[in-house]
Image (cartoon, rainbow, N blue to C red):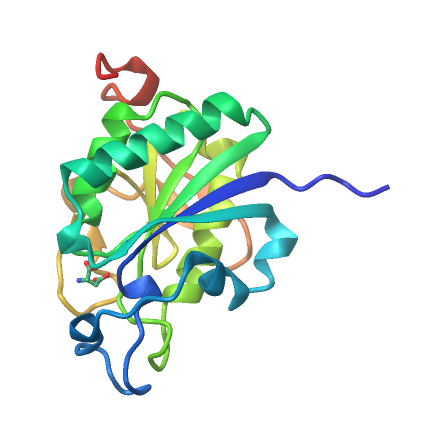
Length: 215
Ligand code: ASP
C-alpha cells in the first residue's frame, strides 16, 4: 500500500535562495548580477524533497526582496488564499523570499492569509552557487514544516537555519550570519530539526490569519 504524501505548494519570489553568483566564493556580489534560478530549479537541486511531499511549484516574481512591496504582498496573499480555497487537498504553502524584507512579508501574510493551514516563508543567506549554501536545507526544512499537521493554526511561520519562528515577531539581525533571523525576547516556536522531526514548543497568542479583521 502506498501512503499518499501531503501536497505542498511552493511559490518562488527570488532572493538569495535563488541567487546566481559568479563563483563559489562569492557571498555578496550576486545580488548585483541579479540573476535568479526558478523555483523548480531550486526544487530540482533537492530531489529528497519528493520523499517529504508532493510539491507543486510556481514563480510569482523573481526579484531581490527590496523590490517587494504592497503589490507583491497583495499578490501573494490573494494567491495563497486562492490555493486554499480552490485546492482543498493542499496541506500547506511555502514561499521562498529574499531576506531583506522577509520579515515584512511574513507579518503582512500573518495578518491576511485566511486559512489555518501552514504557510512557511524561507530564504537563504548564501546563494545556491556559494560554498556551504543554506538554500537547499532551508527549502527542504520549509517543505517539511508546511507538510507537518502540528504547524497548522500557528499563523505564518518562517523557517531558516532549522529555526521556526512566528511571522509576527521575527526580525533580521545580521547581514552575513546564517542565524540572522531572531525572535528577540519572544523565543523560537520550534525547530525543523536535524533528526527529521518538526517540533514545536510554544504558540503565538496574538490574533492572526483567520482571526484578524483583515480580508
Ligand atoms: N538581500 C537580497 C534580497 O533580500 C538577497 C537576500 O538576502 O535574500 O533579496
